[in-house]
Image 1 (cartoon, helix red, strand yellow):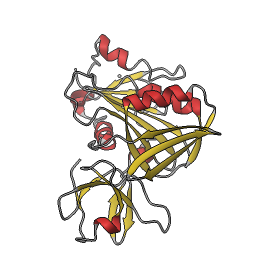
Image 2: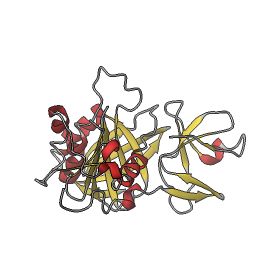
Image 3: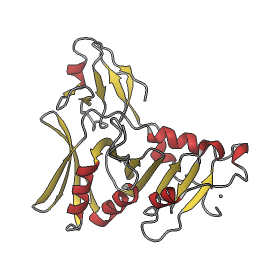
Image 4: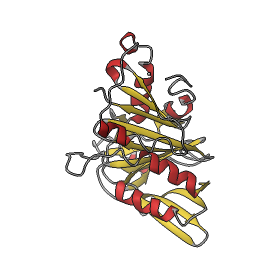
Length: 269
């Protein structure tokens, strides 16, 4: 749980909102906006058919990740217009993963989207950042069409210049200030190195439980083949909760999931 200024949360939602699949696309389970919290930042992640965008703002929170449907994110965004300082809680109640936003007596609860695959945005952006020194990226022009440019118009939330750098065959890296990072699929700037300061946000989030490492946001299978997601890092002396990736409204302590067989298999992203 943490508090945040409503305009700060609204700003990161606005910066990634354009990056979503069109309703007539066969988008499967990626048609969501991801809210992802680390101890230092709250991230909002949007993904379209050719782009991925991540905006963040500083918070003092826990570790959790929750995919939110775009309609629910839009409802939250509208609620923020009438708010000032809000409290954000990640909760698991009645088998559902939820995000609760409150300011005094006012409250809005947003459910996590059910049956969604994991969006490996950290891995994708780490690969992109690793391509910055690729020989083919040198002197390679940035190519964007008008539709591409329109998607990045919200990146500079408070007037920051939006900067594009070619990554050669990987695509184009998009930055705006220190708290926005994006990638444009394939079709160059003086300033901070793209991705500088993002190592804390992109690192793998492992924690140790009962002698085994688990990762926040990762998917696992139990001995029956049922899929489970680790939605949040447990607090001190707390047992990790697992949210079903196969059945809606099922969330169980890890001990119950392992009762029939002491094994969790990590599934690929």
